Image 1: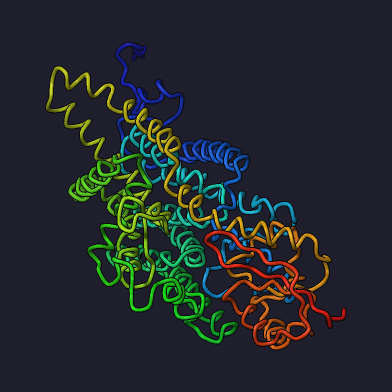
Image 2 (image 1 turned 135 degrees about the vertical axis):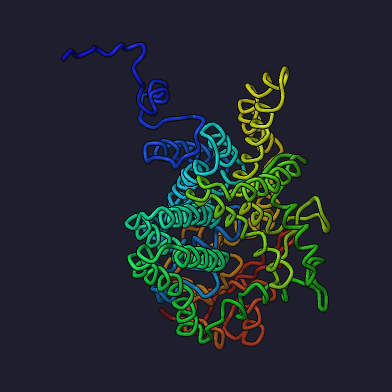
Amino acid sequence: MTTRKANPTTMTRPRGWKERAGSGGPGYDPEKVQPATRGEVYPLFAMGAVLAFFALMVCYRRGYLLLYGDAVAHLAIARRILDARHPGISQLGGVWLPLPHILMLPFIRTMAMWQTGLAAAPMSMVSYALSVAGIWRLCRRLMRLRWAFAATAFYALNANLLYLSTTAMTEALFLALLVWSVVATMEGIAALRNGRVGLARGQMIFAGLLVICMVFTRYDGWVVGAAEWLCLAWALWRANEQVRKKTLTAFIIFTVMCAAGPLAWFWYNQHFMHDWLDFMRGPYSADAIDRKTSPAGQHYREWHNPWRALVYYTRCAQIDASAWETGWLVMAAALYGTWVAWKRRAQSEVRSRAESYAALLWIPLPFYIYSVAYSSVPIFIPQLYPHSYYNSRYGIELLPVLAVYAAVAAERLELWLRDDVGGWGKLFVRFWQPAILLLCVGNCLAMMYSIPLVLKEAMVNSTTRVALEKQIAFVLETLPPNDPVMMTLGSHVGAVQAAGRTLASIVSENDSESFDKALADPADHVAFVIAIEGDQVAQAVTAHPEGLQELYVMCTTGQPCAKVYQSLVWKP
């Protein structure tokens, strides 16, 4: 018996040989749609961290971190958990959800971190980097390698999102949780379909943790969590009996986690605010704010008009996603890409990757249509009446779905040209994806050149507020640091922040017991009073002026005047 030596030029090559030769790694195939490996995800996270760091450098040097009044308020809530007349969990508030404030706690104690706004930067920067990595991981289940990179680049280079990744706003955190929860849902369903019991259990638990975090970050997370529970429940019911039995316990845990978040928030509101729906109908709810700011008997144009709410929100999302008027093209491409993805859902390889469930990224659209039309959440952008700025950042929540499905549409065009068109079409195919990458970079530069919409809103709406807060801060800096000062902090807590004064020295509505006593007799309970025209303190001074001496009057354009009084009878 003779043994023949294999000819290296004719022997059968192992599967994937071509891909490994080109990449140096196993399983690499640029023309294959396949789940991402951990080795692919980590570099994308690192890239996101670098971009966020450069965005922070720019925004910090230009003083952009504290332009949003909501960002200042989020920082103040985190600060008062540790620094208040009665610090503790009761200071978390009853309208804004608590997770962002809890994540700021390790940094907010340092006065300089609070004053500069840098206490929120770690949370927002890491969230942005995680969301970039999550977009990559999601896209690898829907499209080829180069188009996954194009979608991730469009998302990562969005100037509005880069700005939000440096502030105390909650959008960057929520987008990271949204993207990764959709990834966990997709991968959990894919594992159920493929009989991978261990992976299915792990993804269910992971999805449950993400749902809890979403529920404690933004109210849209409640709807997303419910939708993801329905998707996993449907997939579990459709799985074979053996897989269903082995994963049922994990699904029950996932169910409990999904329900625990809202129930815990109901309990918190009932326990501390004495109304389990205080976040919906309390004095600081969206409905109450709308009643205070709107003329009697009037509402914004989208009120009880879902069609107008759709127009305003989608227009806002387009401007947030793309420079000038190119957002129309991105939205149209995303809608077409969604249809393409839905059309191919019957393919076995597509079903095994659970591609269809990426459509969960569309959930913010119906949520905000309802919120704008029926929940007193107006959106104003300069392109539509009344041509002003308010809540324009809400449109950024459609950025993931626009990035993902617009890339699906672009990939579909490439495949059509490659298969059905000759001549110039072949040349076009070669440069199509590089051209899209250049457009992503150009979109970022164009948005920065014209000032991104979200940043522009912050700049416009902060002008008069910051001017008044600077005047109040100047006065606060001259007062003895430990003497109690009474003032409302709802709209102008930034003055205390700018002055570098502790919140424990301020008697405010955040500590109702001390505040109520001081309102009944200001001169006897506090050393100084700062009354802003129309607020509770000003009303208390008008009702009980005894023992108070007026020191300063501060007025700025577009803001009510503030008066500073000194008590003549207060004793330490």
